[in-house]
Image 1 (cartoon, helix red, strand yellow):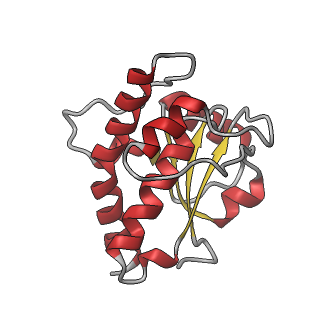
Image 2: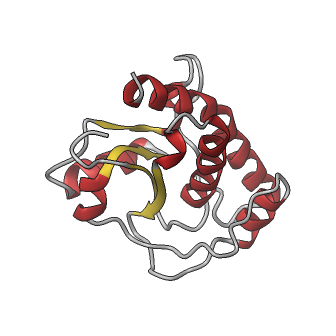
Image 3: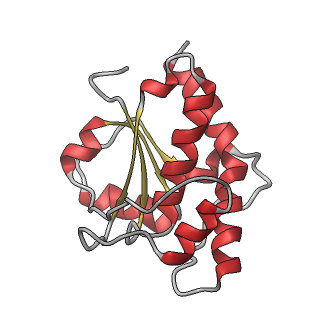
Length: 161
């Protein structure tokens, strides 16, 4: 790992919907991928998180449906120390990336949208399902699932080569 940067960080707004789902999805994928990638830390944080909130009920249900558990998740805001330990930070929308650039002076080399690993024709943003229907959460989850293989490949290419 580069300069002690051993963490893949997912950032959203409140750290109760999108980023916890992304964290669980990638952690499961890295365990399957092996080859050293499973040693990476994977965290999710919020730009405007209230510390200690659990994952939203719809997020928990959407992840249970595919065999992943968010019951123990607790929200946390991002700090400079989190940024400093991150090899890559994935935001959900351009506004998240803009906020990171405004708030933190030292960012890792890789700061990108979660879906930036997909072909250019794909939609980049992961819309916030907060306050939406259960179906909105499933669509959000599925849009992240679509990008997980690309994230694993990105990590293999950049960290294992």
